[in-house]
Image 1: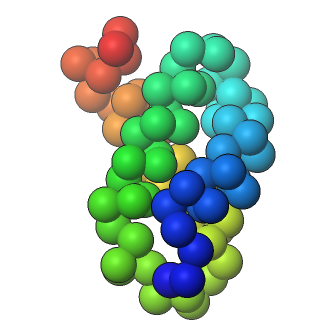
Image 2: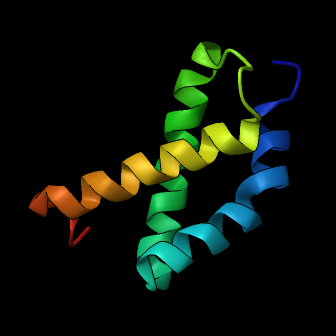
Amino acid sequence: MDKSLEDIYKAYAKELYRYIFNLCRNETLAEDILQDTMLNAFMSIDKFKGECSLKTYLCRIVRIVHKVRQIHPEYRNL
């Protein structure tokens, strides 16, 4: 991966936030999911194989984080 983590954040954060907000319709929750998504992406970036675009990879992480927050009650009110 030749992009720095800061470059990735700058390139995708606004677009991901809009996507997340459309999923949950809650600004605070959207911000939390964005932060969790970026943290997860940064921790697993070495697993990114480039078989899809980085945007697709990040959107997949968004969907997982969003789903976890729906399923597990302890994450609902964070």
